[in-house]
Image (cartoon, rainbow, N blue to C red; front, side, top):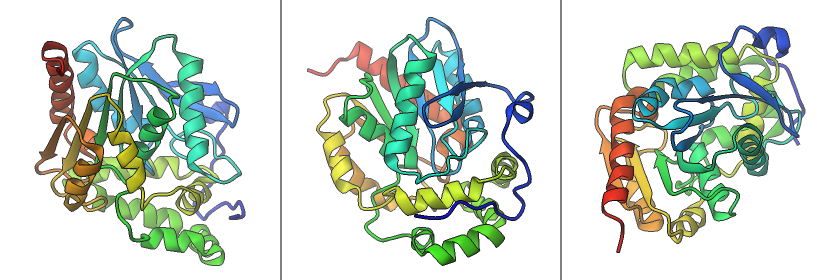
Length: 300
């Protein structure tokens, strides 16, 4: 197991005082405090937004606003170790994130989850939640999902070599992670905003440990069977992908389509890995049209 450490540049503690100034709400779950935001029309269909590897809940802000204008209610949150949720001093497994999402839904809303939208690593969490029956939405939308590559990424190889991971994490990590975010988006303006958003959160103690522990313990590749099992689910699925995605390249889309068997799929042009963040209007419009078409033209 990777030893807990505090990296260079992690100077801030996460406590009540540091969280007072931030938008959103907090709830203590069984493994720690989770930062979440439940917003939009109170009578709207509830959409659960599941995050990727590094992003805090603010990633979804502009996208969620688009959904609110169309009458939807949204629940977004920062996964443990991200944003302003607690840094857990244990292994960051898929089970940890599944448990967090399940407990959060039960703790903060009486309404049923009608739709799930997930990006990157969050797609793997979303499929597992639905396959295991922890939530039973009416639709599932995946955006640039991780997990389809059969090769072990370099970051995972680093994380799995303990002494390399700890050396990298303690002395080089956070700056390297923030600088690498340029590869996640296409436009420079989005890169600047994303780096500020993630960089602020990475000033809190335990952030690099959390990221490396996730890379070490969460199965981010070789998840073809998970996609296949999700494909067997009867609920309608929507697949979206950025044409210029450098993190989970769009070349993997045909494989995902063959396994997932989505009702609809779309490539978003002039877009990198973070479509809901880069093009909130386009992604929200595709999702809303997808749901409306289901209601007016149900499957036979």
